[in-house]
Image (tube, rainbow, N blue to C red):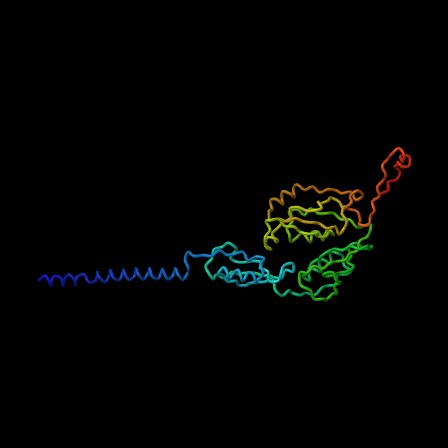
Length: 313
């Protein structure tokens, strides 16, 4: 009789036993899949993306392999001032957290420069020459002034110190130096206030005023090429002037930063000065000789003409 009851009991709850086994099997399966998925995706294990900017493509590739990452070139531009193959931009940015073997998308400076034909700008005015060079994907370089009756008329063009023959193939964005006329009675210009002016505008502003860019100095905030493009002027030398008191071709040194608040504050504090050409040495033509008058003493006082009928400058 007891044996029959045991059989009935076993047959009555068989489904409960299988249900428990099924639930246990499903739980184990879920844990196993979760563990496998965690291993495949490396959940919780990330790498920090290094800064590849300004590196050559070879150096960047070595660093990527060492960091268990992969580089993928997605775009290239040509900037003659930078090294061929230099990394200009990366995605994700430096410091981002990514998984192992993640592709880092980069933009580099082209390994092969784009070539353009040099136009003939001799005989044109400086402004027209600049327009023609820009249309040809070139830039105005140094302004070299020589004596001539036609001020700012282009008398010659050169590239890397050698005369440039029109139609010659040269790299795009190259700077073309211009020889310009400069008459003795029309050789003065003003120095504009460039404080807070963006990087990409400073050269054209100087050219417009017949001035040269002496050099550009960046502060510690500017670290990459992208920073360079976003920087602004916060100081300049010489200081801006009111009237035409600087000789055409004068070189201007500019200091740039990413701190736009500093630049704006300096712009408000800068007061342009009117420099008298007859007393300011920097404004005098290079070949001008300044003769100092002797001090007035009892011995030579009688020889000094004190008449005000004529003022000779």
